[in-house]
Length: 235
Image 1 (cartoon, one colour):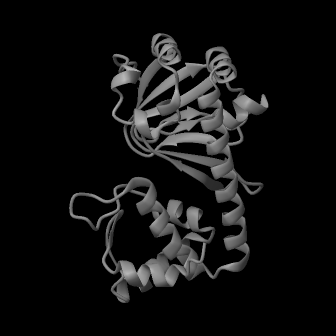
Image 2 (tube, helix red, strand yellow):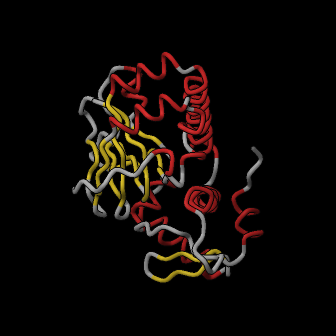
Image 3 (cartoon, helix red, strand yellow):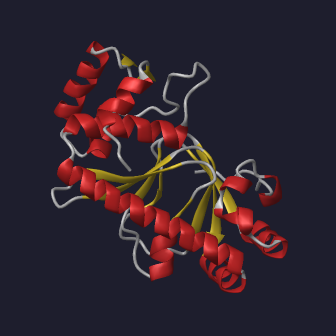
């Protein structure tokens, strides 16, 4: 981890897609003065499950996975994070330990905002507090939906839905087809909620059916209508 020059919050390219889009100008200046920005290499851990939070993290650039260690020690990815998102806020607001480990999926730049400052601003800034509630409500809905789909949807549908979810989160590369993130087969299986062997087999089936193209960790979405149909989305 290295500490680069702090990018100004006012000039952050993802400011208006983050929680801080609603922040009062004075509060934004306080955050700007107090935050510490660091660079993380791919595979580096930003914080560990079980540690106590001392602030929140705002993603300036890069991609992060939040993963929980199951009873059998296997990793379970609970959230994918992109530029403009914040993380660590649930543990901070509930005054509990982190329930997940944050790991960089690629080289990333992340700003850390101290606990006391963040909580004080939340108390004084109604717009920011409302945005925080909106984010928490959205995360809760997604979690409830995932539980329902894990219980009721076949693995084939869940894989198609996961590919659409990754596309929605990280977008596509310039070719308009390739998912803009590199995930291992194990990580994809993790997101789907199935064994790695099943994910590999189904990805091969999707390729055979002409829905996707595989090149190492690169996945190209070739037949979006068929992927959407296979995902069987009704929400």
